[in-house]
Image 1 (cartoon, one colour):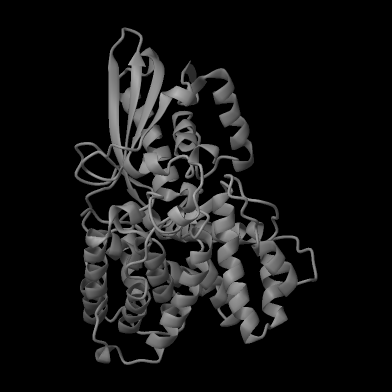
Image 2 (image 1 turned 45 degrees about the vertical axis):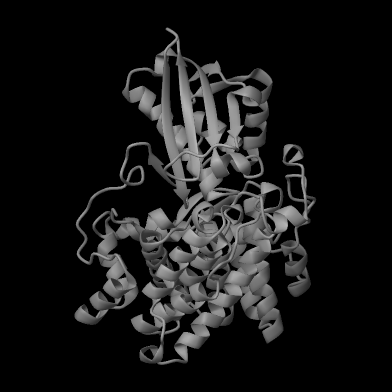
Length: 473
């Protein structure tokens, strides 16, 4: 597998799903670029989209059709003003045209031009879609993509994710064993190894800026979620809870920005029970924002985006953490996510929720252990403990929405990450019976054995116990 940068694992995007929203969004952008490269762009008169497998089964709840429309319009999920997106979609639906590449209007009727083929799956991956350009001479140009989790996409016929580069890293890492060997052989910490690899792609200042932007996006997302009330979109009637929790725990206010709010939390010195409530509050805030089509950091997916920010804020607010530790946390967490992606999956459509919440919890446990002074072996041990205790976790979104049980699962993943870190820091890794690579291998085997109805299809588990008319969502 091609080398993976930390900025591939930690992406800035728009909710509610990395595989069902961000991936198709990027696929649509890539299709437009492809038509430009083939000198077909000016000949396109109409666009049609077909969604297959899991993308079709839960695509309405995950806003996959909306994401494709925005991608075809060349909106950037990292920077577009999210508040303006509903009006753009309404305009497309009313006019039945789309501004292709943000430049020229072509026919696109969302009602019939985006087809949900739930009974059909493409062979390479459950998350498949085709995007077809109808040309002025009657010909058709079709592009096929697969959204393989975490916002990564693979084009039909490609051997690796779109945009992936073949590079030679100073410390090649395909497994946790590789990572620990590099640390031992060169006397380096985990983030030091990851930093030296990252220099293959970027200059130091660029890495610092990128990590700062990642953290600022996470922090602002938590702040927005803790100051927004109401009912989440989609038809389930899920009421936001983070703001009420935040106000109960910190009644004085308002606070001018995220930094002022965090400083007030730090100064409040909450009791142990309240620190647990805050961790849940942080995680809820992110995933309520994610469900509301807000901007989040895919870490490693949107559905699991709340775990790492919640554990990072636990470190900053309640463990006397400092800003310098944020980079070390993120570098460490991203490398654990990269290893699991290479050796298993971060796609719920392939592995169930163990591949999302389980992986994010392992990443957060590793990051927290690093900044609290853990050795490389303890970092790996923490990741293993967190991942092990999510094995078999299914993905059964009610109504195909990233709300029930997804939002609360982020609170569970965050608390398990903190517990896993605590256990690892108090243990001798040489006494451990299960290496991280073994847990990852077990997760992948469990994914292969898992019934497909528990893999982001809304056809099993809670999704059946709480029936919802997807067409109404």
